[in-house]
Length: 451
Image (cartoon, rainbow, N blue to C red; front, top):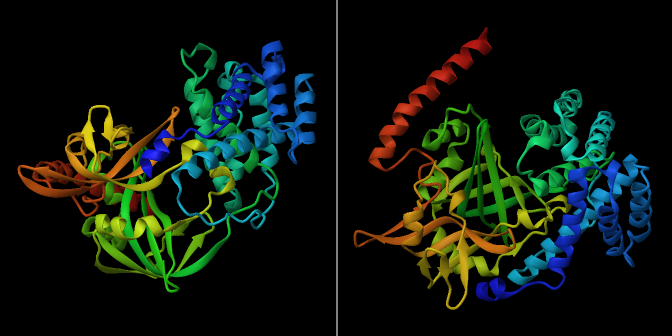
């Protein structure tokens, strides 16, 4: 089945991404100075929506933008059209995977109106008019006041964090006109997502409490200079016998100097989560909230450690029959695809894994420093649990766990094996040294808070 997925190329995918590229190029140069070629690219984007419910609004908005009448409403439609195209590409790619999926509700509960979103829309409008080439220190810093206002409102925290990170990237790159290479797709993604989240009463995800057993498949570790996050992918067996593909995450702030295995210490508030990863245990859940997008909202007070459960055995027996959730609207993007898969019977080589006539690339850049999984183990493996991703026009697998033969001994290595501390002597010694610094920083922070 996976080989068929790798060979498949959804009809219209190339054309849809080309339309997105045209819009993104216009954002590089700014909507205030559209030349004939970029105006034609936007007109082509409008043509793609002919016959759709968005046809009139997209056509009118793009016509106004081309003549220089750039309003918040027109930009919201432009961002929505871009998101719709990428969402269609996302759905077409997932259709080739062939996994059973539940439908995402067409409308979720509306979020609370946030007063400060007008400021974010204003800053995002100025960015679009100036274009990335026009971003200087003053324009990049202009969003700071809006971010502070948003951070003060819990209902706007998601937008605030997104804008804060986006503004930080722009400040670090300013003046952008001097850059040799601009992250065109990334900045357009951040801009359009932020603009849609800035709309009043933007719908939020619906969640409901669930009971059952969570069976781990693997964990994807996200290491940022100031945050460490572990996102576990697994199967949820509910009381009614349904098996759902879900993911759950925990995270904690940190400082830039805490890296590698010692970052696990920052997740001390989640002992059951860490033990489930390190000891490959199932987890009994009672009343955890599950969103319609398949995110299980972790709460240590509502979980208990269960029996050992081998992730490879779980994948072999239950993964193919599991039902995946439909993606949330803003997550319908090719770059957001992360499908758990089990690969066996392949031949590993420098170009990837040969599945018998077709090769899937290996995304080894995502292997975390906080886990024991290495490129050498992956290329020596005979079985792999990983995330199927689509990026730069091709499919690739990010390994989360492998089975291999090391010194004539069969081993299984997972990215979460060091969740309770490194099990390899050299790594354990290095972590103990680094861990001392973590304990000192935590003690000093506690002292400051007490004062």
